[in-house]
Image 1 (cartoon, helix red, strand yellow):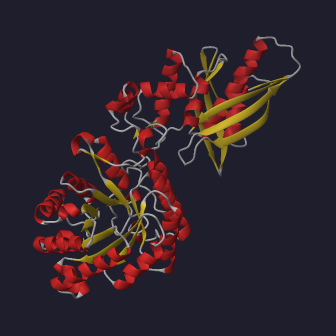
Image 2 (cartoon, rainbow, N blue to C red):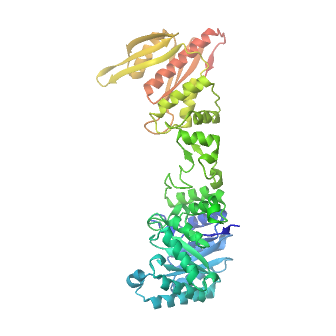
Image 3 (spheres, rainbow, N blue to C red):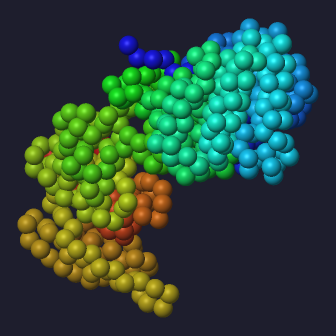
Length: 514
């Protein structure tokens, strides 16, 4: 049976220490309620003594958020402990989290305390906090750079004074997983009363080790992990909650541990925190990044379509995403292309698929990513049921401020290739006049409209034209990254429709075919 690891979320306290990530009380309350839906065990709502705003946030969260234990941070000072209690009192499940450094670096240069004085301060403040609440957490700050024997002594004394959780911080992200795991094992083996408290860990990501260190600690018996949504926090951030949770759940066979987190709420929580703090999640971020469940390689896409476990170790639905994304681009294969077309409602024949796939590959060499609108434009032309009396073979246009716009067009007309050059008032007009002369059409161009199918300078342009001849009005469409080519395709598409309707000898007074 798996051990249950407590998730102590410090997004609202340590996460808020990210530059530019400060939240007001209303925003903190909103995030706290979502954290409760997510199922975290403890919410560190803030540092009540630090400001009136933080005090108010802790107070409101303690009173209004149901489910998790609500915690306030407090330095090992009487005024901090008292202020934390003032913010928490009256709520059903509360915790005071107090801390003081144990590393000689901090004691000498920051706190100006001897080891004995720091130990006495820790005992006094844990005792004071325990006078207010039954749930007290103690942290020896900079534990990973502390003398281990002294660390053991302080932890033993804090537990004796009433600490129910002892948190081991890697405050500056200094440790490696092997070292951190040994430290937790050493605490279990050398602190006589350690079984009276839960071992917690709080790892920073300065060397990119926050998550590996936290998981190494779980392997050595830690029962609580302190982490933040999206890994935000001081400097390079904290251990990422979603990575910890999904790491434990996905590799339950290895860690023998799990959490009570409702993982289907992960994406929603990540996006809320990102929106409120303004801290954008990098696309390749594990679990919650835009690319976490996006597959671009044709080999990967083919395997995924045959069996999802070939390239996905987690289901996107398990973290709150609807489905995986097959990113259509130059690396995509025919299998993924056909799958995406079917999702869009198209069921091409083998020949239609082959023609469309060739066009797709040509377009993919011009665009970084192919969007659904691009695919629809391609397939709508390739699935065209109107016979192509006129087919564009090539187009060359010259135009400039001191040059008469000239178009050289090569068409296939009823199977015969013909070529002609013509001029006009602009490049599109030159192309249209030349095509009109080559096809000997008597039609009139009624409407010409251009739009970008997708954003960006590499977007396909879609051209829509309306052409009228006698009682018939038809609409033509064309798409290409070259707007002149798209214009020629749209015009020829309309002319082909006119030829088709003429061949049907339809006597209806006026038809608008789209």
